[in-house]
Image 1 (cartoon, rainbow, N blue to C red):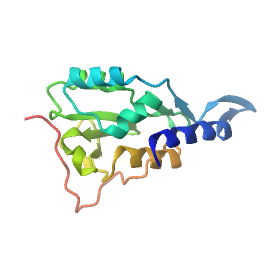
Image 2: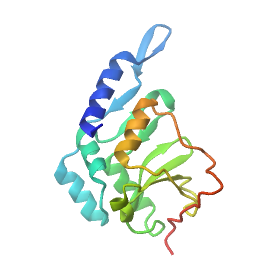
Image 3: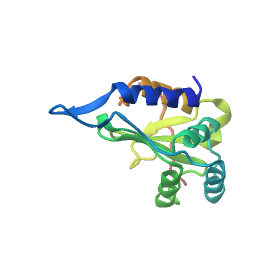
Length: 171
């Protein structure tokens, strides 16, 4: 499914999945934000000297960030959040790698150096950059699965013993 269709699904789901307390509507399960412009995305890409995945750029143009409010604030970062994270992690991350989301204890990273492979997403604890594991998918596929599961984590918290971790710690 393309990014625009996925974001339309969120609009539909918001009408059917409200958060209630004592009969009062507290909010929606999903929170979208106004989209970012292509010029803003390009400016941040150049400022941080990174290449954003095409499907991630399309996502940001539809919704500059996304929060699954019913699951403790699970969220996809805005383009500005990515820039702020990169500033905070300056000198630690391998060049071309950037965080895009946070789920429970896991941070989702994109390795911009692997974009051509279509398998460039990794998960792990941001405090241990030597132990990130592949999600083996593109951003669009990851987003689709997260929407289907209402923000619930679908990957194994402890990776299979045969999967070798990847280090994103800069030498």
